[in-house]
Length: 156
Image (cartoon, rainbow, N blue to C red; front, top):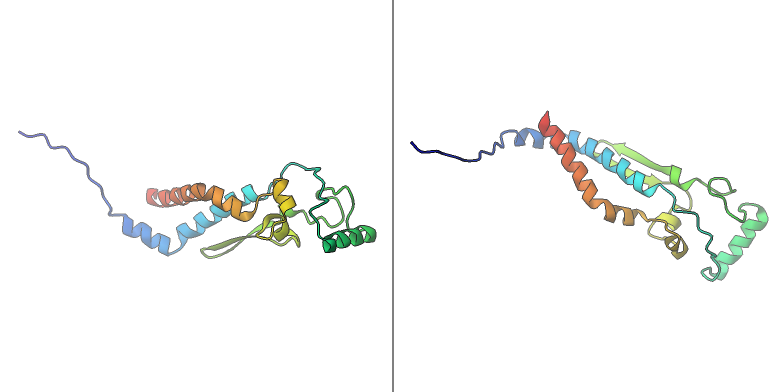
């Protein structure tokens, strides 16, 4: 009499899961959860900074600032969400979905200067994260989200 031991791996359900992924059910759910996660990381404001901006402005930027100040379009000190010209940047991060495709966008007129590729050095110094910073930092979590959604599909 011999004692046999072993491990059996059954991939019988893999084709079904792959077809569900292809049918976009898993991709739709995972993409939506990923976008919600990313929005939770990009939307919060950094702590208020009272750093002076002087010295980092070009002549054109300085002229534009004083023209807007004179016209009442901005005020000093700036108050987030309350000052004229505030577009409530953090609240404007929106998720758009079309089937398996998802996007996270912000339509505030100054979003690219604060959290985009064109981020002004002042905003980097005061703690504003760019969408690329968040994406780079959250890649491991996004992979976990995808794994969780595939796992849910396998469990059903």
